[in-house]
Length: 341
Image (cartoon, rainbow, N blue to C red):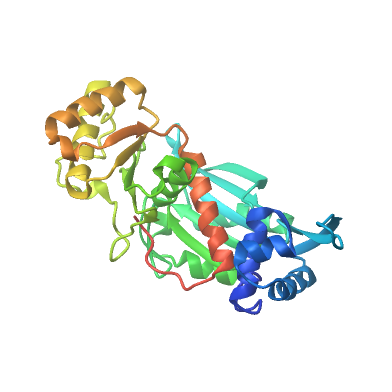
């Protein structure tokens, strides 16, 4: 099923360009959109006519012009379509699912959080069914889970009951919507960068250390996610560092935890030389960050030592990144590929 916002179904590049500019401006006249897009006012008028006919834009008022007739003002309709994102994370030693219905600006309209015990396909389908029944405007679905999917099939995941399933195909067939799968740490890395203007354009590694599962990394190069040739980039639990990530007491003491994280950061920095490494773990605090920085300085030459920072909101980072990817899917649906980073 094609997205209602597919530029091809809307009549081509010009309509997509006008839509994108109106969304950024929120409200604009034909003349303002012509200036923003580089298109003629006649072309903009034709695009606006189609957007208004579909309900993607609305005529809202007339505004005075300089010496001529008042100009029609148009507003982007953020409720023309909605998206739904589902992501999971470990919290307090248990796994939880978080669902968010959002408008086209990524603003949350409805939400549901629930425990997954244990994570399973029916455990994901039930809340998705509820959210979709409540909001018939949902037109795309984004999944953010701790694992790897190739062509939509789960090949590695923290939740064994879901491994081997083609979640993208299953949910696309079940709901008749375009579906996206993204690794959770990939999405969090992207969301972090979007919230940090100074991070845009930098190379960055976002390292997430849950208490009960192996760590993962999201890698950003030049502002874009780096997933690797087969979608497995960022699987830092496989670094040959001799660390037993299944050890329940791995982060039990701040000194031991700092040493483990410093070795992991040093390994990442030696290979990728990122501008910044962002660390996220419920057990981390600013004092440990200082210890990790000092140990990295002792393990690496100065040119390889990255700037370190903490993220305190993994769920927020993940939700933001996953939402932006799902909005892109809505506008430009494409076949699923390998997704992990």
